[in-house]
Length: 441
Image (tube, rainbow, N blue to C red):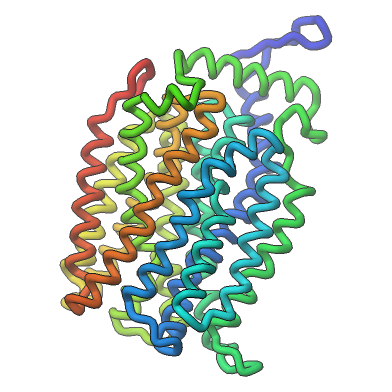
C-alpha cells in the first residue's frame, strides 16, 4: 500500500505500508493509554455498585427490586444526555467534553457514599449515568478523527477492552477495600469503596485537559508529513466507504439505523446483566468474603478482555465486522443460558458458563461499532452513534430491573437469565443475517 500527498505545494514521496504502520503505532501509543484509563475508571465507578451491594443491601434493607432499579436507572441518565453530549463534542471538542464527563461522574461516585434511602440511591445512579453519558460514543467518534476504517476495530478493541480490564482490576480492588477498611472511621466498606474509587476519576478529569488532543492537525508530536498522511488516509477511507448518510434527520428514516439500535439493545441487555449481577452470581457459588468474590469476578473478566482484543485485531486483519460480531453474541447467549441452567446445581459448570457468557458478550462490542460507521458519516455518525447507544442502553435499565424483580418473586435468577439469553441469541442470529445497503458487510 502506498500513499502520496501534497506538502507545501509539492507532491510528497509515496508512503509505504511500513511508514503508515509506524505512524499509526505512534498515534495508538499517544492517544489510547489515557483514553483507556478514563474508560477503565468509568467502568469501575459504574460497576462498583455490584460489589457495594454485598454490604450495602443488607445494611440499608434494600430488596433485589430496589437494587435492580438503582443499578438500571443509571441508563436512563444515559438515554436523556447521550445525544446532547455528542452534539456538544462536535462544537467544543473531545478534550473539553471528556474532561467534563470524567470530573462529573467522579464527583457523583464520591457522593454515593452518603446513600441512606432508596430515593437518594436512585437520584445518584441517575446522575452518574447523566454525567457519563456521551463518553463511549464520544470516544468512538473521536477515534474516527484519527483512524481509517481498516485500522479502527483494533483501536476500538483496545479502548473498549478497558471495560473488561476494569473488572479484572476493579473486582479484587473492591473486595480488598470493602474487607480491609470496613468500620474504619465508622464507615462501612462500601462507603470507602465509593470514596476511593471516585477521587481518582476526578483527578483524571482534570488531567484530560492536558493529555487529550482533539485531532491530528493539533498534535504537536506529529510532523507535518505525518499529519498529512493521516488526513489523506481518512479522505481515501471516506471515498472507499461509498455513499453514507450525513444528515441525522435523514438517518432517522434509515432502516439500518433502527436495526443496528435494536441489535445493540440485545447486546446491552446481556452485558448489563452480567456486569451488575456477576458478584452476586459468584457469591451464590459459595465464597462470601468480598475479596474472594472480587478475585473470582476478576478472573472471569480476564477472558472478556482477551476476547475483546483478539476479536478487534482479527476484524481489522480480515476487514470483516458482521461475523466477528454475530458469532460472539451467540456464544455469549449460550454461556448465559448455561449460567441459568447450572446455577445452584453445579458450581464448576456455572463458573465456566459465566466465563463463556462474559467472553462472548463483551468480545463482540468493539467490532459491533464498525457497523454503524459503515452506514453513517459526518454529523449523522456523531449523533447516530450516540442515538444507538442511548436507546439501546435502555436495556441496561430494563434487564437488571427485570432480573431483580424475578428474583424477588421466584426466589431464583434462572428465569430472568434464560429470558435475556434468548434475546441475545435472537440478536446474534439477526446480526449474522444483516446486510448493509450501499456497503459491504
